[in-house]
Length: 103
Image (cartoon, rainbow, N blue to C red; front, side, top):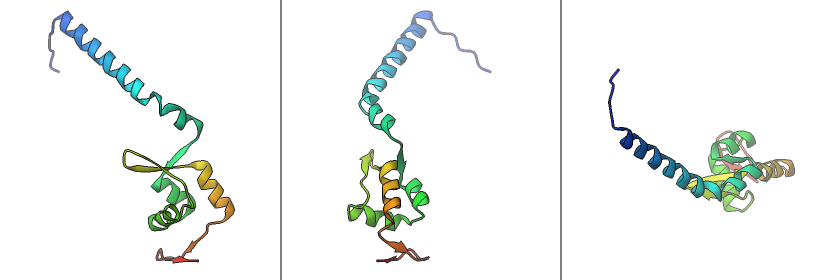
């Protein structure tokens, strides 16, 4: 194990900088916190597994406006309630084993 000695003032300065970074991060994410606390959000893989569909079928649902989604940092998220509503209504398309779609 390597031991490094630094002056107390340097350590205090680092602590202050870290504290400021933490505050900036909390402020930046504050506006998103209520969105994610209200409801559970799922990513593409979770939706595909839950609905037992392919990624291509999920894309078709999005393209046709059948499943609303939100994009955050180039990644799609879906409200659990929207996915459940689509499941309860019956999936609008059935896929066969090779992923092609039958209406």
